[in-house]
Length: 459
Image (cartoon, rainbow, N blue to C red; front, side, top):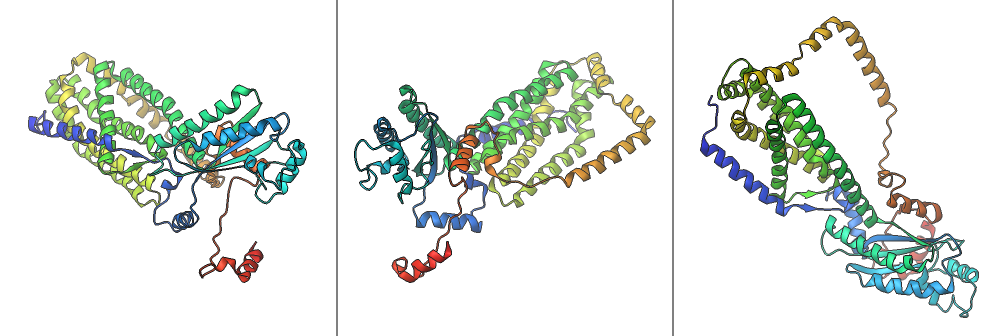
C-alpha cells in the first residue's frame, strides 16, 4: 500500500471539498416550530387547513403590565394609540388586537372623565374586550397577527422581533410609566429557540475547541499535529453542511450541534491511525513507511468504524421529524467525508510534520494502557461486581423517567419567553389553545338556528 495517495486523487478530493463548501451559500434555516413535524402528519395538515380557512396568522402576544395603578389611566390612551400605529408600520404585521382598541367604543365610554375603575368594569363585560385585561387592570394583552412571505427563517424572525421590541422600548421606557412588556406566542417561541441555540453555541463550541486543543497537545506535545487533526475534523463538518446546502436540507435549532458530533467522532476514529503512526516511528521506521504501515494495519477497523457509525446515524431517517432526519443525513455524510480525508489529506500531511523517534516514543508511553490493563486483571472481580451494581441502578433509574414534552418548559424559568408565558397562564386563560372547526356542511349554514343550537350545546 502506497504511503502517499496519487496526486490526481488529492486534487480530486480537494476540488470536491471546495464544491461542498460552496454549498454553504445555499443553506436555509427554519425557525418555525412546525418544521419539527412531518408534512404528512394528520395533525399538522389539520392545523394548516384551519389556518387557511380562517386566515390564521402567526401570533406574537405582548403582555403589557403596570405595577402601580392600572393600564386605563387617561394619560395612557394616546400612548397606546401611537404604539399601535407604529406596530402597524412594521413589515409583515397584518393586524393588531389589543385591550385598548375598544376604549373608543360608544357602549364603553360615556364621558371623557370616566374613572379607570368604571371603564375597566365596562371593558371586561364587553363582548370584544373580554379576557384582554385582568380584573385589577394591571395586565393587558396585545395580540399581533404576522404573515411572513415565505418560511420563518431565523434571520427574519430575529429582525422582526428586534423591530417590535425597539418600538415598545421607544414608546414606554423614556416616559417613566413603569410599564413592562413581556412576550409570548408562536413567534416569541421561535425566537426563544434561536436565542437558546446561539447562547449554547457561544459557550459550548469554544469550550469544545479548548478541550480538543488541550487534550491533543497534552498527548502529542505538537501544535502542528494538533491543528492538523482539528482542522481535518472541522473541514469534515463544514463540508457535510455544504452538502446539506446543495441538497436544500432545512436546518432547525436541533441541527446546530451536528458539527460537534461530526468533529468528535472524526477525532476519535482518526486517533487510531495517528497513534499507530507514532508507534511505528518510535520503532525506527521512516515517517513515510510508518504512515503506510499504520494505514495498512488500521484500514479494516477504520473502514468499519466509519461505515457503522454512518449507518447508525442514518437510522434517524426513520424518525417522523424532518430536523432529526437531517441530523442523521448530515452526520452520516460527515463521517464519509472524514473517512476520505483521513485516507488522503491526513495520510499525506502527517508524515510531512517533523517527528523524531525519541518524540514518538514519549507519545507512545503516554498512550500506553499497560498499567490500566494490569490493574483491571488484578481487580477484575471487584470491577465486575461494581459494574453489575451500576447496571442494576441504571435499570431502576429508567423507571423514574417521565415524558414531558411541554415546549414552554424547554427554557429556564428566568428566560423572558418563559416569564411571558407564565404571566398568561397566571392572569389570563392560559397559553395553550385548543381549536375546533365545526362544519355546518352547507353554504351559509352557520346562519341557521339549528347550527347555532348545535354549536351552543357543543360548548
